[in-house]
Length: 405
Image 1 (cartoon, rainbow, N blue to C red):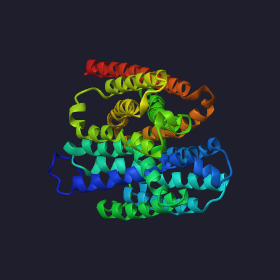
Image 2 (tube, rainbow, N blue to C red):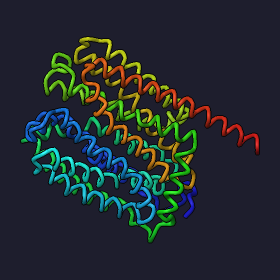
Image 3 (cartoon, rainbow, N blue to C red):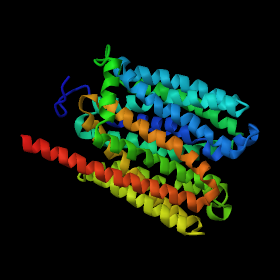
Image 4 (cartoon, one colour):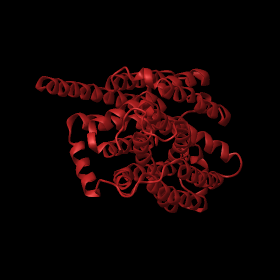
């Protein structure tokens, strides 16, 4: 079927579809970050150290990110709704079992299964929105969903902290399993049935993936993407593990500190139309430089206080939130016919960075909070430079195309 403005009568309902998918993104991706407020309790129950327990983020994150490279092509072949349903069913079962686990080894394996099940959602959902939402509203739909992935880093921690107050850390996973089942049923209701068979073969999708990652401008963007959530998750992990109580306060103050970033995440999808007037690469590079500058300021302040810390984190999160919606659209458009595959590689890089961020904190924890923040600032500044270089390559390619026509 061709896309002709709003003449099609079978476009998916915008608000109902976007609302359910946004909540789904918050809860599903939030499982990656849910362990951060629980690290001390998990370490105590599993008779291990907090540093070792931090690996549970990576146990989830790497299979989650790597799974995109498989579930994207699977969604092209077998259908968006089918792949999401199977993935969330697997995820819900693994989430319940984590609550029963009694060691890092068992819990780590189950976190990996949980992450692999979660990988079914993002590529399929993004592809569904780009196909089923009418074109004039599509950028906003994508912005809401992509921003939910970012907001999940905060919402996942907030939800875990709230649920842990009702019982032990195990109750957090039991409750999340119920939420995942409810979300799976809601998605099946709101998503249109899959069409009979995809047009792409799995081998064709993987060949397209190989050709995309070797394109210089795309490879630079993919590499820079590692620093987006890598730095973001690294900052919150460092505050959880390394920050003194005098800086972040007690559990109540830390809860408010996490919540202080939410207004920035709500705002970004609402101003997507205005942001689209600026080149995605230019606003991405600027946002990364601003994020790096905020971290340098945080590292330099010995005792900023909770209020100032919350304000700086708000600016930092706003900068990070500016990045993903534009880059998702840019990478998808540059991938051409392999749009879903190109987005799958992008989301792989985005979440691979998120899973590696906590490990950077653990490796550098001897440098203290200030030292870790300076390293994360340097990483995000370098990523900004990579995006500037990619912007120049894209501009040159466009100039050559214009000259040849």
